[in-house]
Image 1: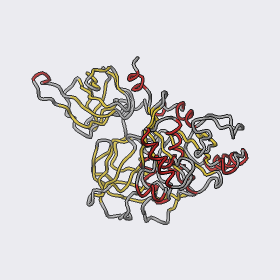
Image 2: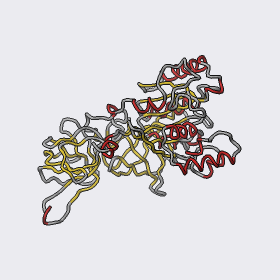
Image 3: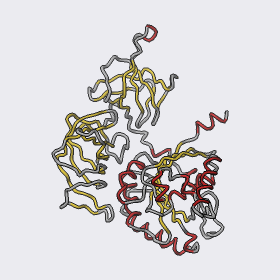
Image 4: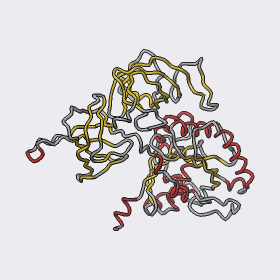
Length: 422
């Protein structure tokens, strides 16, 4: 196998980083990139020179990720910054999200496609409200794996009891979360302890380093391979003599496995057929699975258009116009009850109105707030929507792809909320 083939075969781990301001997220990511040799020499030279200008004796690794000018000047992250790196074992995409309370919406954006959440805790401060907020959002977004990095261990003299206490406090809180896999690592991002290399200062810690954890954590079973869902994006009709009768339905496999010869059903029409062929990257293949983008041909000529969904006859999503969702309000303007919105769901687009606000969630206590229905930026609330036509949806905790929606303001065309179908 060539190096190129080996590179393409490596699986991809998407992870999001979250923590309070100054917990050291940018430094940790910079250290991860530096120690895994994923930085170009010119980048390193630029960061070394910037560090010297700031009067620092060491390299300020946070400068590798704080790309926006405002961030560099203030030393904070104010937008989702995506970083890419790879090792011989795996490829990675990092979503570096802000720590400020007012940027909850940015964390939701960064975490929506993540397999894993990296939660940073300052060893001097322990578990704080922001820790709980970020962990709750990770749980709400059905991120299956959380790695809690207790950072700045150098500032507490690498004491095991400090780490143990934070671990106990977090585990007490985590009993309220819907996350099966939570791991803890004591680190010093500034000095590189337990980031890529084992720490000599914490020989009491017998677990894996952060990079080894990221490289080996099992994510292939996180995808839903049971419920076959193929939302059609477009219909391919070449209009050439060579392909005179060709009609391919193109899109991305969101879940399940589709094979040639499988009996399938097209929704919402309910017509059934069999898969005649599957094409990916101009090559005929025998089966397709998420997140492959393919074109599927059927044995029967059925009227199918964008927004329709190809599924299995005995395994269908729910079709409904009344939808319960948990939403994160992202707009700067407060929610106005009388407004109408466009719902984007898979490849579908329908109009809707909010019928009822059930409650808001106090992210710090996880309690329901039922007497305050005023929704402002970054609020998380449960509401009931009525759509102009039925959506073909699964619950978000079963299928993240067919269980998520986006609300768009019809007047401004701005995205105002992201939602999870319950």
